[in-house]
Length: 228
Image (cartoon, rainbow, N blue to C red; front, side):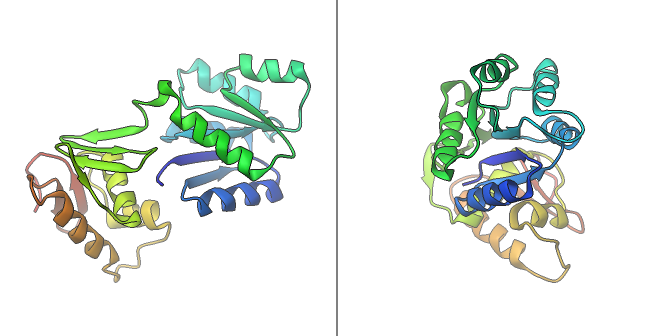
């Protein structure tokens, strides 16, 4: 599942527990350990859900959230905090949080709340990525082209979602490996080429080319003609 989650949490044990658990469930997770880093990541990333601790180095989670909302940020935010007083919950929700979960918490409840935030009707448009006649529903992982369902492997799906998030951009092999495989490109492996070939076969069987190879530069996803 290529739902992107940002975790802003300064306690290493909790961060490791949440990151490992969400990644095992198929989520793409980035972790920041302080307020400035969290705000920078919120501003610069495309997130489906953010998990935000209240007490953070630099400045606290409530400050992060208020600044982000004041700038027009719309990513759903779930507060994770030991502050369980009703007044604190009210402050968090009034400050722009979409949900509130008190520590300690069961991972199953956290997972259910994350999924509920992604499913909210207000997020329906943001949970569907579309370029030309290709669409991917991030919640159901359903991919279609011109209305026809495509059956993709998990890695093919992740690769397509990355392309859909960056239409008409020149994407280097290094950048794609880092985002989809979470590792550095060694300049030798043909793993990416193999997956692109198979994705092309499925995606372009009954339609025009969308994945273009740019020699020496990488790939571009879109309907314009540059590339092979």
